[in-house]
Every structure is written in C-alpha cells, then in structure tokens.
Image (cartoon, rainbow, N blue to C red; front, side, top):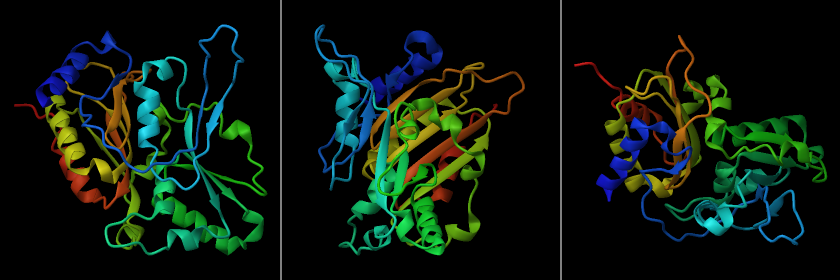
Length: 298
C-alpha cells in the first residue's frame, strides 16, 4: 500500500494539473472513534423539486472527535458532490470553561473540552459579560495555548454574528496561507511550561523539500501518531516543481493534499509552513524531522 501511495504523490508532483484536490497519499486505514463536530456546509440539493438550503449546521453536543463525520462528507460521493465542510466551530462558556479544561482524566485519556477546542477553526466564547476582564484574559490565553490558530469570537447570550462563522470556507487547504507568521514562531517563555496534554505547534523554514523524503516522513508520522494529531496544515515548496505551491490539511489520518490556487511569485521566499494541533507534541522533534526532508544538492 505504501508504494502505491508514494507513486500517487509522485505522479501528482510531476503533473500538478492532473487533479486539483486528492486524498493524501499518506492516508492510513480509517478507524472508528467517539466523535463530535459542529460544522456548516453549503449544499446544492440534487432533487429537482427539493427545497434549497444555504447552510446546514450539525450540532453534536458531548462528542469530541469530528474525524468520522469529516471523512464521511469528503469520501462519500453522494454527499461530497453536494456538500462541503465550511468550518468546525466550538462553543465555549467563558464563565465555566476553565473548570472543564482542568478536569483530571485517567492517565493517557484526553480531556474532551481540550479536544473540542483543538479541533476548532472558530471558537465562540460566550457569556463574556459574566466574567471580569482579568478572567476573560486568562481564558483567552488558555484557549490560545490549546489552539492558537483558531479565531475566537466573543459573544453574549449566544448572539453570534453569522457573517463571521458561516460561508467563510475556513475548512480548506489554502487556509494555511492566512496563518499569521508570528504564530509559527516558537514561544520560548510558554513553551517550557505547558501543562495541557493538548497544544498547537507551528513550524516554518526556508527551502525546497525532497518529495520522496517528505512523503516517507508523513506516512511514518501518521502511522505512529494519527490518533494524537487532531488538525494538521501545511504549505510546501518541492524541489523540481517550479512555482507550484502545494498545500495540505488534515484531521487525524484523513488528509487532503494538492496544488494551491496561487503559485510562488518570482523572488518570493520559499517558506514551508506547518501547523500541528494535538496531544503530546514535541516542536523540536517535529522541526528536526521536517528539516531533514529538505532537498540537498549533491
């Protein structure tokens, strides 16, 4: 299976136009797991006389892992032809979220509240009127440590601005382009003192990647750590691919990979960017392994 997957990626790199978006050649076998997601999905109903909807919201209280739902939407032709995932949204109670984030779980078990924050593209922080400025600041810092790449939208009485959570196509491969570069820099002060099992890690470095080496790294990473990787994103420059930018986005082992809508500009610095959100992540080890995938002139 690995050889077939490697060939699929190599074929795409030789001819990026062969398919605008494919399932990643790194994808491993799917497993069943408890899950949760709140997502929005524009659709075009295939029934000629059916009522048309702009958006569908899936509300899944008490669940923690959206991977099976995302996998179903993206891989079932009857669904993916008419639906797409717009974003994964987490609703957090500013007054009480800290006590849920602090809940002690059995050794090795994941805190569901931390997991839901980690999966989100957007976090609706509700009941901000019931806390002090210092309490809200502490909550925002905690959320940022768990998932510094999610957009936090502050609300009162659940009055959410729909224009900020629906129809934005947040769940797309090119979203890595919108990541603030400073988020990819190491936070030395906080990096040594994280106590949460879940955290977000950003890595960036300049150069061209060796396609085969990077492919093998991703296959090994997903084989060993897929359950721990809640969200992944990447912007890649490969040796021998001219000005084609490659991007990927994933939830656990379900990863989409392909050429970006825009290419590298002449003279643009070739910065590879990676986002990992998950459990027990080591930024130093990830950075070292990724940089070992750089192409080296012989």
